[in-house]
Length: 287
Ligand code: SF4
Image (cartoon, rainbow, N blue to C red; front, side, top):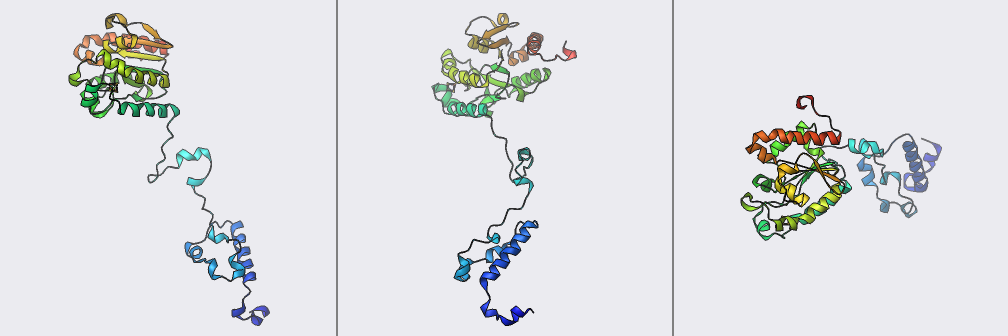
């Protein structure tokens, strides 16, 4: 017991000195690396219970604990994508192009320009793929599977298209896939010229956002609709057509290959022609 404590009874504790001593101790601990105190200490702190001389002083460190350093709040940019946890998954920010496409997609979902299609569809089929794709595959119109799932080329013809894409050494996520119209014509009939015209604005906006270098029109409907011609598909295929800065190649529709397997060779010749121009390496087994 110090002389000072002997001469000073507990009832007359000097709170100003006590507060100063506590603050100095806390600052010392903070310099030593202490970042926070246990909650009971913090929650027990009630300035209103202190003498007036202390209640108005700056709130001590215990009331504003410094968050402990952890991988999640380290500020290095490189850590941002690596600190995801199952409880709080961080999704990559959508790109500007994807956000622009999302706007068009929302408009498509509410479109009723073609009365018959809008009243019979299950889902609109906007298009799918990489917003930065150099290559777009452009098909005819959604079928039953696409109408159910809201995604183009997911049925048998879709599987055939996937085979073509994989044979090219690329993946579906590397390209973009669209149709001439976004809603399924009942009974899988051909889309009418009026329906194609109604939907062309959406297509135009998608292509303006994606800015592909190449478009492959799959089948006569897509080829004629895109190039605004009436030429048979057999005469359109095998060469590039141009539409602005875009090189357009026409070939048979995957569904047509399923019905006419002998046409598979023609399609592959067209695809090899495309690959050469794109600078893609053709696998030896297909040479
Ligand atoms: Fe609208 Fe196109 Fe569907 Fe017609 S086909 S209702 S234009 S989204």
